[in-house]
Image (cartoon, rainbow, N blue to C red; front, side, top):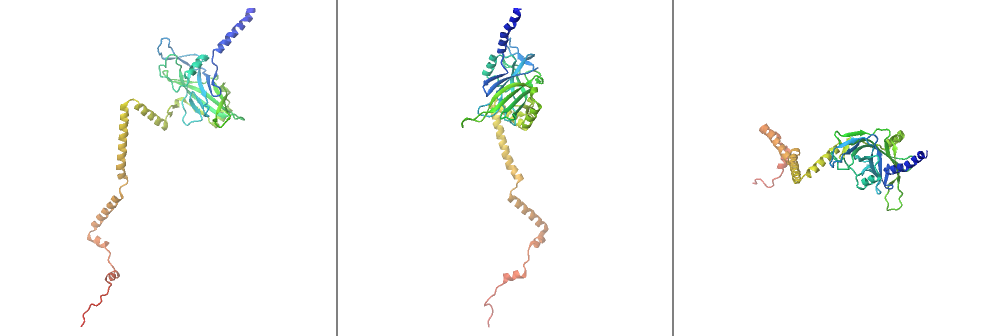
Length: 349
């Protein structure tokens, strides 16, 4: 009987030790300005590499409770929100792709601190197929929805970040997983404008509360208000670091990047580029010279051409044509020409 009551008492300290060895859902890096959210990914496949042989083995899947790490920060001098160093507010015409590393759900605080200290959360793309070395974590591209609206009757702002799909190309075929579980959580952050105490301080916001809430708690009313104030939906497969796929801006940016990569290949690429620029310059000059003569002939040349056409038509009519063009003088005009008196001319007897 005594052992039956002592057993739960003995297990209780071990339970607290186990909980203490797991990183919390919200880890503050800098109070009010920077936090790490450990977003559980319900039903998501866990990607890993078998590095027991000391080689970079292909990535594989296994069923394990896992989470995504989101580094949410607000700069002290700029009123903006960034996730994994990618700015998402204020709204931009070009949405940036966001990537997040995957960890086991029961990651320890020490392991999380190591990831933070080594800047492994600042990922901008997926590792190359075949792995990124021993101990590397899988990186996923995120499809997400984000909203930022003012709380009714308050000056505070409410920010929601909802990841609804994961994308990865380190597997063959590429992986695309929809996070449709009813247990899936959403990042909720409450922002409040920081009071300005001196003229040398910048206006900005600070995080007063951050937590993970079930997606089902986001009511349709709040979603409707968010749509009115701007709901941002980003489908990862429709965007890349050049912008939205299929647009003119995306093509221009892609061609510019391809040209930059070509120039980085060596000296011969630079010579080829300079030769192309010179050829383009010569072509433009020739077009300006000969194109101007064809489009806009000289005024003197046009006048001479008109005279030649007029002379040709007159020659076709013969002498009669030239006589018709002559004007006969009237007697008055002739009298004006012969008007004059001769004085002292005569014969005297």
